[in-house]
Image 1 (cartoon, rainbow, N blue to C red):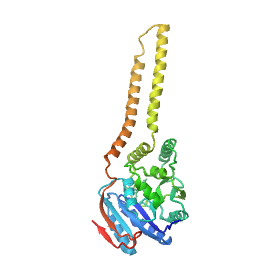
Image 2: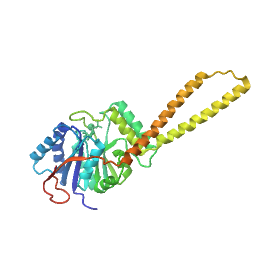
Image 3: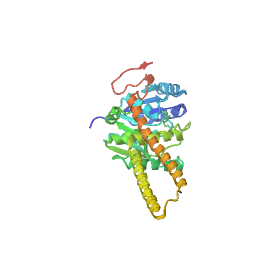
Image 4: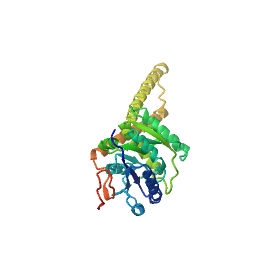
Length: 327
Ligand code: UDP
Ligand code: MG
């Protein structure tokens, strides 16, 4: 088996400077313990806070520190920021983690041990969802159940983006050309030898979640349209069912007319039937439009993100590269 001695830690952040000031020293401490060469890749996803100062202060305090700081030209979203970090990472292994302190640095040695034991992907799974409201946890379970029944691979409900990927997994991921990047789904799609390590998510060390209900709904729609054709099949199913009901009701009216004559009644049935049917038709159109929109996004072939500034102090991988700063 090839060497597994260099590690990159990729952290996408949006206005998370306070939490990063706590996380970076914790990370450095854990990584030192693991006796491997490491770098930290911080991706600033269009934030407006003093992240750069926090990173520079950290580097200053720890001397030779190997940090790459990438600034995207605006906020592109966590999934794009993660892709930017993965593309920049040089380690033989890459850890993806959040910068808000919810992903504890303390489990890094466990992830690394599993990777060095031969696993290509080591997934940190939530031991419990205590920090989430029961309604949100239930909705997430339903979402994964819906996504699941249509696929050959399992997207585990308790696993997020917190994981360690071997270089060949990262390279495979970077090869995927799609713009709709529902990372949890893509990770699962890749396959490879996978191990899991359980962890307790800590409460955020500062700030508040960037994923409000609207963003979560958007992410869920992205996940479904990118990984399941089930809604489209449900549209066909609904069409077939309503047609059958219409034929049965038509037959009933014909028989009733033959037996009892025509009373010219039933306008209420007609009106409510029409409203129901136009509602269902619009809903189905909406579902189809969601997929169409996704194709439109893919067809435009725009880059996933744009880099504004790269400050690269990392020397791992390609030997001593020295300090370089691109503006
Ligand atoms: N994040 C990001 N870009 C965004 C939204 C979030 O880079 O547009 C980062 C955020 O700073 C954090 C991570 O993604 O490091 C997870 O976000 P958050 O903690 O808000 O999500 P939650 O834990 O609530 O799911
Ligand atoms: Mg969080």
